[in-house]
Length: 434
Image (cartoon, rainbow, N blue to C red; front, side, top):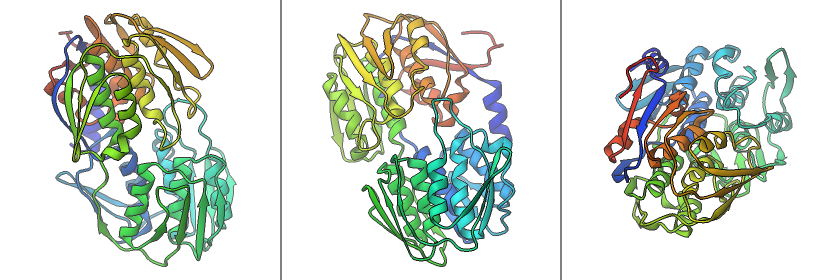
């Protein structure tokens, strides 16, 4: 479907109806990583040559960034499952506010636009309401590279006839800031060093993509990135890494329902923090090449976890795992250190009978014997995933309203869960219920 049809489908069918209590069984095909596709798509602005990205899932976030690119004048097309991008006649001042405000990742166009065209105007970004995520690290880094930055009413304007290398220290290992500065430095004059850089696999994948365009990047996956700017980047065909958060979501759902599921293709090293916690909770984990199998026999055991930047436990899997641990034996202690408002799923879990107490950024989750189906409202992408997992494990029927959040990061979620034996269906809230 094209982007207009995609939006119509999302708007028309917002709710999920789930009859829980069925163990998940089978295999799940994992898509290319949403969190890697978005910065890579932004990085295609650095070259006028065509770039092909095979197997990109048609997610709402991908659709939004494609529409931003088209608004700039970029040629973006679908050829089967491939995304083909060519940025020739680009207007670096044309990013539309109504699209950029939808998604924080849209701000990633700032670095490449400024680096290639010497100027850019980018609206202030939006996205999930999961806490304060300021762009000051992006701006400080771009200023260090030689940019003049002016804030207007709802937008930031950048100018720099030619960026130059710099030594940049990030106060926090921000993924977005690391990615934006990495892209800008790829075509700046001289060497750039980014210290306290984010180490997430998606940052490494962006660095590998830039190298496939002809960039010189060293140290990807460590806390220090060194980039030697080049004058011109060329086109490429590049396979984006698999989505560790999607894979983790299905593994956690398997644990919650007492199932037996294999996910793949994945890069198992990207899942190490989650697999360690699933083993600690009593799951049987079997890594077989590019596939991971989880068998959950009996009740989960309570565990403690703290979200941290990579290689720590990923914040994107905190809410899903909390949903599963609400059924564990004992009390789990979950500390969220990345985003201060990422407990918005807790009131919805309580509606199902979960026993969760909040103390600042820590949640105490005392497992209950069962959850009961309820009408639930999703507040953001990963909270929506958590509610789906809770509903799959609960007794009775649940309705997850505002399920459109799921379309930002999960392709064919209902179909994949249905193939694993779940009773799940998406319908408009005005349609007849099952």
